[in-house]
Length: 93
Image (cartoon, rainbow, N blue to C red; front, side, top):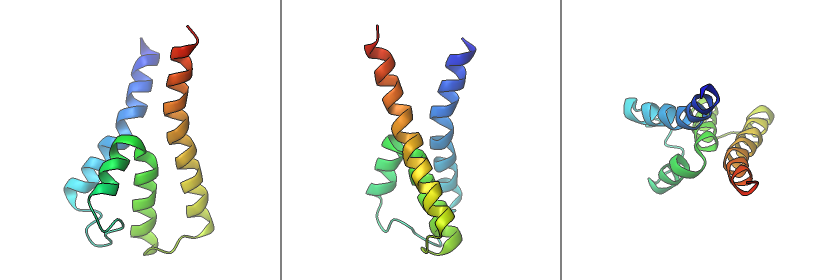
């Protein structure tokens, strides 16, 4: 039961943080996306990548250094791994 709560928290926390940052207007000054569709799609499909991209854009003004690129790669791998492992566990039964 505790393991399920950890997984649920790991899936909800990036979305909750992205929602809270949107509510308080954290991304308004930088406007990293220039449209509303990319953050919405990122919220549902790749929240950690969307959050990392927004933070990199706010803190660096759109210039990505080496460490932000590493962070983006890790965020993409995390997002793809969290969805892929759930599908693999469902097929093994």
